[in-house]
Length: 357
Image 1 (cartoon, one colour):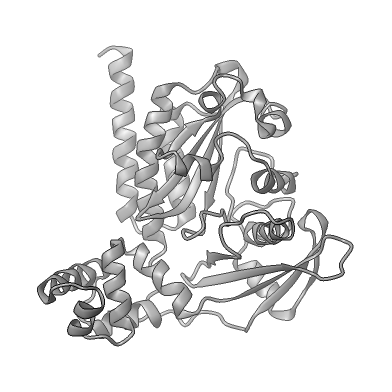
Image 2 (image 1 turned 135 degrees about the vertical axis):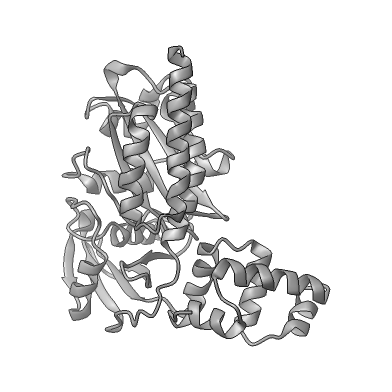
């Protein structure tokens, strides 16, 4: 077998391994570490930074990297939120692909990108490959792959392979966000933090200290607090400037499977660029769509499931969604099968109460 054939075989083996991650029952961190083992050689990258994301907004809410220095991570947050560079994650998603290289997006002139000039090149890298891990309409995470300057840019085959892997990683991360089984969760009421310039921690409420620890990123950064809080604060600052934001809140899931919602708002009259971030346990209205999406339900199946949870019977669903009753029944069978339940009661318990089955 020639080098091209050997390369193709290795790539196919890596993709099969990534595909299997969706059914492995892993945490997001474990998915990332296993994906690194599978993809590093075939994608031929020298460093990687992994993120989970709020699937509803696509905003990153955690960071994991064993390769990159995160000593000036506040600058990475600033560039991500404020810089209109080529090949940002929103632009990649709007383009209809899952992966893009900076060299291709800039027609071979990566120096056109601010993040290349300020971060990538000074760190000794020559190209960046970004992949968005989308599944069922949401971005569950993403990866940033770096290639050393002396190795040349990523090639078309690298981008195509990353695009294929991204779809499977989206499914794997989606499966990591299923509802907790029988978990009582942690709820000490809303937690409040105040962030100053560069998102430095200024003050915290009592419950915030424990919640910050529970939501800590897998990798320690110079922020000194979870990435999700800094992202929420930067989005709030954008609203003050009249700039568009995906939403005014960011969702993040703790290790026990429970979702939290972060709301941020600038402090009125503050001259120090201070922002208050309030974190609270997600309400059923916030969490249910996320859990239903995590089960892999289609948009129509989610509509049916939400009506069931709200107390509608088959006739109500049929009328409200303009469906024939037997079509509703077909959707119900699919919802129950994907959620691993046998009845409406079990479905409600699973997605609202963290109940077992």
